[in-house]
Length: 285
Image 1 (spheres, helix red, strand yellow):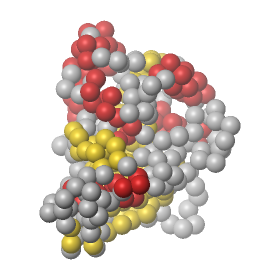
Image 2 (cartoon, helix red, strand yellow):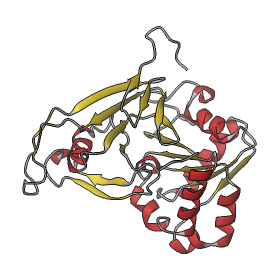
Image 3 (cartoon, helix red, strand yellow):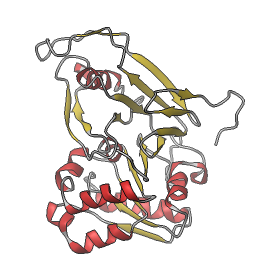
């Protein structure tokens, strides 16, 4: 799908400049992921719409983002808490999205996003703007996972890499050739992403660590941003994959799964799957 827009999926716990524990965040929000979101959206006067639909505490989440974007000097931030498909069809909400330069999906449960927004007027408008405009769609945790065509809906870590341990369903379809997982390192999600690509071996698995994201331009390339790492699973040259023949609950075998570990500044070409690695002595940005 040819697009003019930009996707910024984030692995969760991005620095909002308000956390007390900075173990998984950058020291200063001005150097962090939300800074990149604002920059790509067009600066502090751009219209940013935060959608906390995935969250069970939308008021708190919305307030956190108002404060975080406020720290960056943003002047036009709107919270749109969608809790029903009717709200996703509401002309007033559609009008707000029409004027937006950026939409930011919060974390929580990614299935809430697809259930309440998928296939509605707002979803159609997001896809249209993403294809035709310099429009930014950002999302953290669940908001990142929902971006793909094939979306991970859940998975039992204790049973990881047994057939059926990972739940899959249709996502929002902004990027068709990736499967995105979040909180990847801290929550030990290697097994569930491996099963996801075993089930869909033509797609690239992307595991995002916390406070780590991607800037995906025109659906062709992405650059890693943030303080952590990105793990890629490229299943193109798998030699043994018994996912299709096993009974549910059976341990799987997957050999020759190509893996990359990328960090801030590294670039990946989605089409030809080539990597440009930032020089070792390059400064952290």
